[in-house]
Figure 1: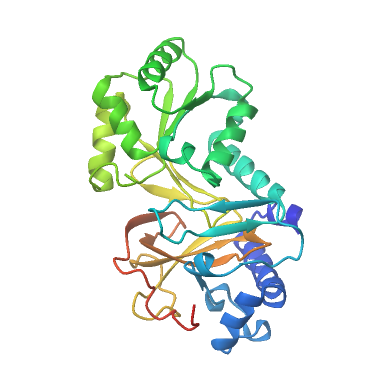
Figure 2: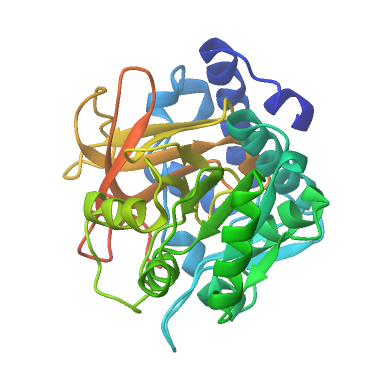
Length: 324
């Protein structure tokens, strides 16, 4: 199945494989099976991906979401405040993740060997279990470039390296969490010509949250670039969406975004309507590929999407069918 998933080339192929993955997870994931049973949904009744039940993302905090009996190779966990319950993504085959992020990056940006990767991800580096750190660490290694690396508090050193490499015409990927990128441009002014600046979102309590347009304007001015790229990913997913500007994201062929009605979680909205984000990530073959997130957004006719906010409340309305 792994080779089939990552070779999807059309919507028809995606739909066909998604229905097969749904059947597999219904039969092999006890938590997901119970959720579907409560909705009186069985694979024999499902002919469209729009009718597949999407598991509320909070279940990754309270249950072991597994569609495999194989040994767990990696456990990815979300960030959280002290004492809070974090999401855990149990990965029984890490190659699914490795294959997903490498193919995804290549799909949007080309070969990783073409880049020097500079990572400014302090809050992620300071804890264990980050799937983002796992991915970026591997991208750094696979760049095979001695200048690639992580930066924690040594942002002056990063600024010097970034300026020097960019002037040499080096192709650079600077990937960072929003608050750290803002810290960097407050201490240094740049006029970058050969650098992709990619924010991974979130102030993580370090700064006041600001809207995306304001953030991107500050970063564009500070780095001297015309647009800011973004990565859309989370602990519960093994795939990522990427934006090359204006906050409009695209998915790899094995990932799809739908929107649901915020008042009726079982109703999928037509394209162009704002709603809550549902994700189909077929790389999640051994956990759950059908996830109802707490993000709000909009899907466009060409299947690109935009994130416009998050639910204020911790529960997803219409999905609280199981006692956690």
